[in-house]
Length: 111
Length: 128
Image (tube, rainbow over all chains, first blue to last red; front, side, top):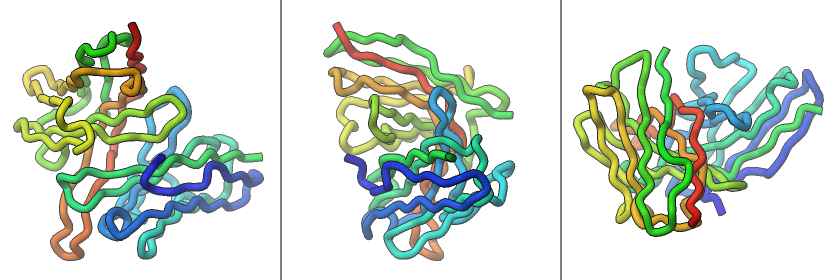
């Protein structure tokens, strides 16, 4: 059972937009910046969003992030078949020494 | 381009020690702005942060695993390592080495906590 709650799956057609939610508490999301990761099986997970809404170099602006209170959202516009992957949210805990937590992952299917 | 590569045995017997090494290529492990860490993913489950180590040797472990975990850095080889003692079947997982950003925003009070580079992962199975 993961600490952060994500929907198990979402789906949408190519070209459409999808959002993935991540719900936590005051002990994690309410206390820290949120990050998002894309994972295709057998490959290295990739950082998509950090500090709630910042994109690393090379990540297209089709990917966006937001946070409100103890929840966060990943948005993907202009869906492509290559976006099919599992998406995870992550954040810190009550302190740096307490460590951080992840969501259980959301499988995105591009129909 | 910085890359991370895990190495180590794919099979460990129950009660023994799991040992993995991560080799950093394309850059130096002696970064003042990053920690180096390990994350695992049991089959069919989500990610679990195991711990992180600074290039000077300072460590930070997941409280739930702290009694069994040791991490270290070998700067001369640009490597860092993980040892997990007294393993059981519950430790079977894909183990990823990562570059970790962890800090405290003194303005907002929020924690910075994310992993900006990952290895491809290595499956470690605990079985007799």
